[in-house]
Image (cartoon, rainbow, N blue to C red; front, side, top):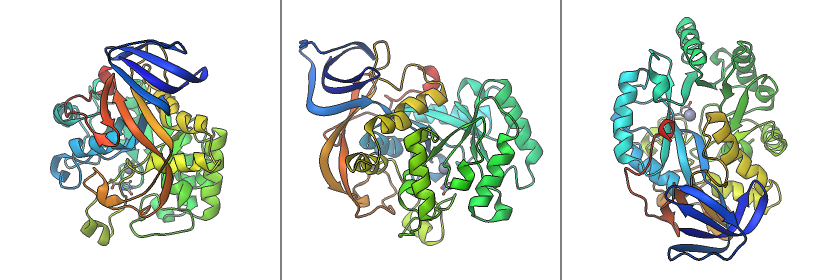
Length: 391
Ligand code: DOR
Ligand code: ZN
């Protein structure tokens, strides 16, 4: 297979073609190669496949909110080749037994590649199937499970697993100080592989030591406002926080951007549920910033592909290079649209970004050589996605 377009490679933008054999990239060149099976994307950009390192695919007993098929369809539509799924499911993913069960389901339902985090619990053996441990400090560390949390962290560290932390101290409410205090405390443990997820404030970010971090589009774009459906934990802070966080993304002080895709039903949102879907809005929102000159395309690709791959230890994803998987995202930087939640593939058809005008859209997503989204149609099949630990 041959892919033609403007390819964003570690050597810069190459107008040329990418030769794919099976699941891998075998050559990238400016030469006019030929192949009976050619995808010619013309002037469109071919980016390394985007990776969302923080999503809630639900499934199990919460399949009415989202399941692995609908969630990974949303990922394919949004330009993501891989997603990393959080363990606050029903039942929780907090043992090898539940993790094996989830793997069994994902193997049949996933359209894109997937990874799992395991929650605080019995971690023995989970390093084989999970990318890392997720610590939810408000309900674990700060709610009477400090010792249990520390034991899980110790296990993760001892087995080379990444520890991803939702850092908030609920005794300080939903303030920047609540985030700052928790981040200082967790960084104080001196872990080798620590990642602070969805950083929402300047105060919080300023406390990070010896850890990587991500933020989300809503913290970059909604500071100081509270449109319908925008309730989320951590809360959205002020305008200055958004400006600070965007600057930190530009400078690389925030390495990654995740969506924190958190689907709920409208009636659950009305009753106070926190979170909203983000897989189908993240890339258009951020490409809009690129078009406005507020974020460089290189930083976007770093935050959404290269760095997530590096942080998660995915050696064959994250860049377009010979030998890597042919997992890539094609974008039309000029295409304009309006965010319409009723058109989401996610089961959760609501968004605080409803009605926003965006410029820059994903037009194709390929996972290991196979198209899963083409011209905005999801064409992938459940069962193609693989556990990132097995790649
Ligand atoms: O807003 C949130 N929603 N924050 C979380 O930490 C959990 C998430 C969810 O699972 O809905
Ligand atoms: Zn989350």
